[in-house]
Length: 334
Image (tube, rainbow, N blue to C red; front, top):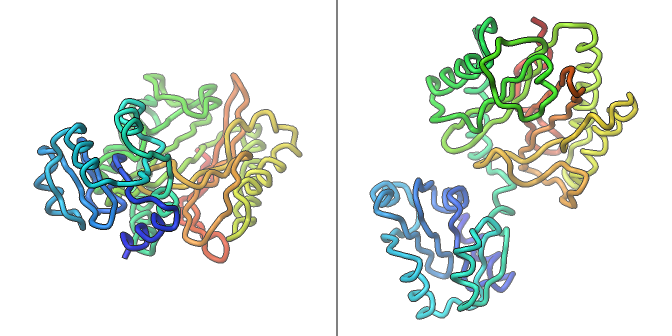
């Protein structure tokens, strides 16, 4: 069982307890994703403390015992009485909450839960595939003769209609010269050329993340072909044991060879699961090694300031080699 493996890892790292507040981490361990404050205490007898707002649903969905969360002060008092020993806390914990604990307990930051989350089970991979299918199917029959805002709204409406409770992140529709902005917000301008669309759905709490750039001109075609070559070579390099930073290097080298190294301004990819950005990072600074079961994006891009940008993003499951999970055509010429 997952909880047994986590407790075993805690013992190996000499943690007597872990205090978990991040909703995605709570969902990973318990099967219940809170909408308001909840605290998961991992120890020999794990316990989920849930606010009244979520209490009924927590009782229905959590694999672990549930009690009502009262306050952090009462939690501190309870922990003092139980002598939690060396306590692990998440990197995402707020400074205010961290300060409440660090004066009274032996506290150490840990990403132990995120390490487990990086390796997807067969069931998790199935949910990610479900999120991909929703996103890809929602791309069909879109009207591009509208504004960027409206095009994004069409996609999000289609995803919600297909069962996604919300987009997995704010949909990006950036056209014309604005496509050189990797994380542009949508505007009320009519969709221009080219148009870069970055979108994703949720399925049973798991996310998808896809980017397509629809091109029109020969110049855009040239940049597109370079980005596609970089992506293909990076995907071909992916296998267990390879450093994540090396995947970034492979993609970056292709783009640099064509003289556009300064125009590739972000990392090559990232893990996707309960969050749209999680371990591992396919970046030059990453010291992580790829492992079987990881799901990552591969998304090189070239951004020509003031002119246009091109990004192609697909999702990959790492087995003995890379298995591309996304199936939507990469090249779309309108």
